[in-house]
Length: 293
Image (cartoon, rainbow, N blue to C red; front, side, top):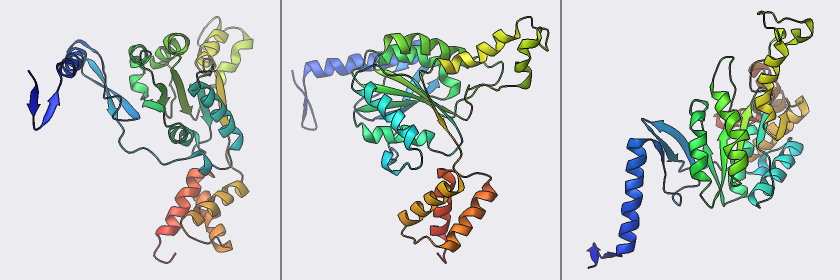
C-alpha cells in the first residue's frame, strides 16, 4: 500500500530508512552518544552536549573569508594550504596547531578552507567538550566526507584535565583510525599551557615544590603541542605591514587612503596596543561608518 500525503509518495523502503534513523537518534538521546545530524543539510556544525547525548548543531551562515583576502601571512598560508590539500586528496597530512599573535589570521585560515574546498566539512568543538572527541571520532570515521575538527582559541591552565583527552585522541583514534579527520587548533600559546619561570629550575636538582624530577613536569606540559605534526607560528605585524592592510581594507570599503588616514590608523593601533589584520579591519570599518568619511 502506498502512503500518499499531500501528493508525495513514500516507498516502504524510504519509510523504513526514516524510521531507523529516528530510532537511532532517540537511542543516542536517551542512552548517550552522538545524535547524528542531517549530513546533507550543512557543511559545518558546532558540537554541544545536551544531557547524556552529544548534538551537532548546523551552522547555517558560513563566513565568506577567502585565502586571497588574507594578506601579510603568505608563508603561513602556503604551509596550511599545502597540508590541507594533501588531506583533502587522501594523502598523508598532519594535525595543525596555529599559534602566536592574536588577530593575525589564525582562525581566518580555517574559515577560508571551507570556501577553498567545497567538499570539506567542519565541526567546531569548545574546550569544555573535548572529552567527547573519542566518541565523535568513531562516528565520523564511518562517514565518506573529510572533516576538520576545529578548536579555536585553545589553551589550558595547570590542573585542567581536558588536555589529556585531547592528547589521547591525537595519538589514538583521530591519528590512527580516521584518515578522514584532521584536527586544527588555534592558540595564543605555543605549548597550549602556561610556562613559568620555575620550569627552568630543572637543572638545579629538586624542583621548587619538592619534586625530585621537575624536568618530567616540563615534558608533560609540552607533550600536548608536540602531538600536532604541523606547527605554524604567527607574529605581530610591523607598522608598514599594518598600514598596508589598513589601506587595503579602506579601499575595500570604497575609500581612498590618505596621509591623514594613515596617521589615524597609527593612533588606532596605539590605543588598541596591537597591530594586526583584525585591528586594521576594525579601523577601516570605523572610518567607513563615520558620517564625515
